[in-house]
Amino acid sequence: NAGVMQNPRHLVRRRGQEARLRCSPMKGHSHVYWYRQLPEEGLKFMVYLQKENIIDESGMPKERFSAEFPKEGPSILRIQQVVRGDSAAYFCASSLLIGGGETQYFGPGTRLLVL
Amino acid sequence: KNEVEQSPQNLTAQEGEFITINCSYSVGISALHWLQQHPGGGIVSLFMLSSGKKKHGRLIATINIQEKHSSLHITASHPRDSAVYICAVIGKTSYDKVIFGPGTSLSVIP
Image 1 (spheres, rainbow over the protein chains, first blue to last red):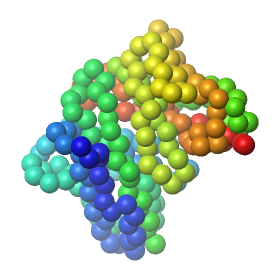
Image 2 (cartoon, each protein chain N blue to C red):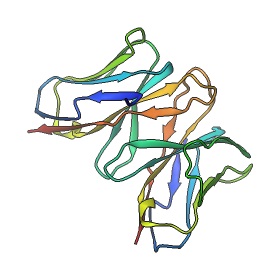
Image 3 (tube, rainbow over the protein chains, first blue to last red):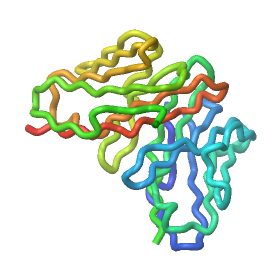
């Protein structure tokens, strides 16, 4: 059973371009979480999704960022018109259920560098 | 005041030493994770606790729900244990949103 997969592992973009980060949850998991780790800072929650639904996006910047988790395929975190401050490691995690502190399994992360 | 705090922030130990990293939190939780992150690497979940104590190899994690405190212990530390250790709590919301501590950077010297 493959773990959580993220791609690309490294992504370089110029200011103003779009970045698309993909996350394939563990098989059978229908809950996906995205987290961001800025340089020299801790991890911060961004968004929680279930299939075809955004459940909690309280950690997402109000502009340029969006996330989806379609019925088929990976979850996508999309950053439009990237700026240097978007350079960070983006991690996704998946879980089977919620409630009762269900374990979240983390992917390896995507390191985004904006030039 | 941060909802999740860790101490110490940085820790240097000699190989073989017993290490303790502490985590305290101020919110109601349903569970607590200890995570390990190597430099430039991904995140590995070491433990998930909701009560008591868990042991895996040289690692031991304890939690006291009443005192809102958890500790991660490493016995017979080794240079390969050098990493950032992150305490993360799963809040008592319907979405189980994770709140991360700032991390403890551990360096074990041979």
